[in-house]
Image (cartoon, rainbow, N blue to C red; front, side, top):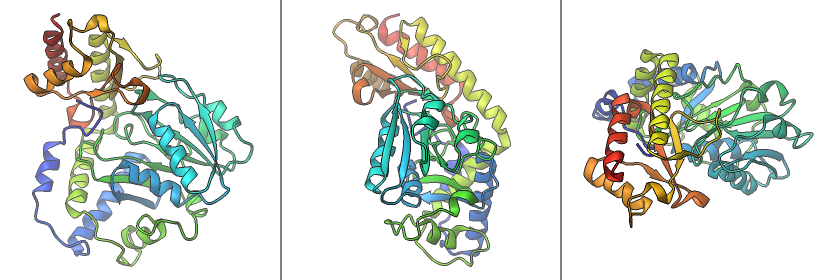
Length: 357
């Protein structure tokens, strides 16, 4: 129950046990096409260029930036946590003129501030679900207001757990990760690119491995399948299975399940004396952050000692705080197959025992 990876769905583990075939095997290519179709359904998009990038969510972020950003391009980035900071770092490495829009830790970014930050940016970028603080940033208002800019969204911790509607919200590029609400081990970064963004791709990006033009020549249906790299076949089998579980449950049902588990967890933590970190109205159900006051901890126990006891005695992992929150906050995940009321009940009971409540 940390901030990721989550527990995989059983069907995903079964898929990982299947025989490994070649990355150009006809049966595998048919499954790859179906995986991309399933990704379109989960992103809620008709984008032809929708595919799993070989690498974790950070590879999805880098793919998005290196294919769209060149020297001197203006990129507006919303920053209210670690992953907004990383967007700035990657854009800067591409030579962009980065314009930051900051919000205080635990608070959501004002969409109007992003739109007003620069008159003619090439990209407006924001993290939908900021994993370091448990905050949901509003994306939907940005689409109608983006003007000529491309809207780039980090959906690593949101896809499958809370509503994401790429086409209806006017998202031009979105990337995610398999290890959060999709219930698949880490290793792939689902990515979708609109036709509008595709027309503005960098002609020759600095990364050969993440070149979307070359990746499309291999992965896109009807492309002729020009060999690019050996994709992680077992991981794509696993993603295919995880997306199948999610779509069989239904996106609305999955969002409701994550929402209910998040509500139960947050209410239970407050009853134990913890204070929720994220701004009310913008709290992620799938990733809960809490301050850990000294008054809540048993005498002479640190927050890390409590987490260690949860892991050693009960087999429950929760995450510590990042950056300025290290040693002061926890990050608790209810994502994918882990998002079950029984897991919330087990954690709250175990935590109560460790704290002597």
